[in-house]
Length: 462
Ligand SMILES: Cc1cc2nc3c(=O)[nH]c(=O)nc-3n(C[C@H](O)[C@H](O)[C@H](O)COP(=O)(O)OP(=O)(O)OC[C@H]3O[C@@H](n4cnc5c(N)ncnc54)[C@H](O)[C@@H]3O)c2cc1C
Image: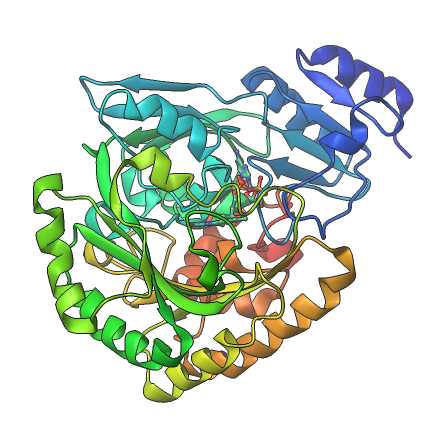
């Protein structure tokens, strides 16, 4: 039982709100992006500043309270929230400050990528991000971060210059190549295991407009398209990025009516080179695979591309997903993909293959905690539906699909595409970086205060 006087004292120490069960706003505050997650924390500290974060970490440690950290709340496994514990909710800390001269971007720990895109685009700059703008900067970055600019500018962590981190003992430190280098190594891929990141400093890259959008093909062409894609994508210019997917075509514009609700395969392209060269960049695609059944390509501001799919995937849907890194797409694997891709269990369910090459390969696999630098794709199999009654169906389908394709994978998965899948999966994901992560965890969080995550267990608690 928590001492009420200690709770009261904690509450008065905060500049932000402390939200407790039965208080107004509690049910809203405990919602996360994945509607399948329904947890009831003992309290939610909506931190206003770093002092609030320090107070919250100290309170959790001193009172032995289970602690979760909420950035954007998008994590599939729902690690942003916890039953009976304390949630450090950073959604009130979303400031972004761009330094156009230095080409750097300072981002608070609770910002979303939409916040960052909005601020950086005004200066013709961009930080590599994911494909949905409502995703949190913190969780995506701490896991690695891949998206449209990955082939040209690397993972999100490859653009991280420094971070402010509140450690388990309540101290605030800077992590960079010059200070606390081991911590800086660990937070680039090791997730929220080492402390609460209150601020990130990123390099801004000169990207403003892109030539982008989806191309869709009929299912009976899917095998042919996938085989072409596996050869084309790795050797394409690093300005060009295309992720492959299976989908059920949404019954809405811009898709033509005759394609509505049809199972199809697609590639969503983004060309980040000079706009005047874009048509030429797409010429080999059109020459080699012929016309698509539908395409919606054109010049657009990068923030438009980064939020193109937001309306399709609002918060509160049921999600069950699994992932794997993939080295090669064999003919057998392609045949299995086409089989499962043709039988998506619900209209929003999908399979994506995201390229992991180009600039991502130019950083060594031991240079940051993110180990799988040497693969070609990060695959995610997502069962998605608005109706909780379908939760089991989409979960079973995802597990079955994953089990069928896992033998063709490189072994581990992107931590941000994993559910609660156990220690062996975590080890498989970090490979020979795992032991170093444990050593750094031993140093910075020996009692495992930060354990609501893809947990790197310190030796004392393993
Ligand atoms: C629709 C959708 C699309 C996605 N697309 C992509 C994509 O294109 N590319 C990609 O790389 N990923 C993608 N992801 C995965 C995404 O990276 C993860 O879901 C990520 O965990 C989200 O970060 P968040 O801050 O929103 O999550 P949260 O749920 O808030 O947190 C996730 C984890 O990070 C920890 N954490 C959060 N904030 C902090 C902090 N400030 N300090 C320390 N630890 C913290 C939490 O404790 C938790 O363990 C996508 C997810 C969704 C739902």
